[in-house]
Amino acid sequence: MNLFLPLLILMIAWLFWTGFQTTQLMKERSGLVELHENQEPTVVTAQQMRGQLDALAAGTKRLADEGHPHASLVVQELARRGVTINPNVSN
Image (tube, rainbow, N blue to C red; front, side, top):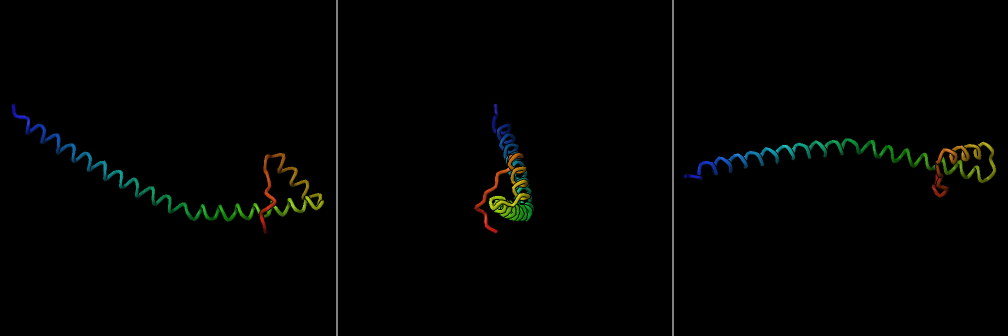
C-alpha cells in the first residue's frame, strides 16, 4: 500500500491550514493594535480630567478643614457616598 499520496495531501492541507490561521491571527493582532492606538487620546484626556477632579476635591477638602461650611457639606456628602479625597494633590 502506497502511503505517500495520502501523507502528501495531509501535509499540504496542514500547511494551508496553518498559513490561514497565521494570516487570520495577524489580521486580528493588527486590528487590536489599531483599537489600542485609537483609545490612547481618550485615556490621556481621562487622566487629565481625573487630575483636575482630584485637585478640585483636594481644594474643597482644604477649605473644609479651614472651616468653610459649604465645603464641609460637600466633603461630608462625598464621604457618605464612599468617595475619599487625597488632600496631598496640589492645584
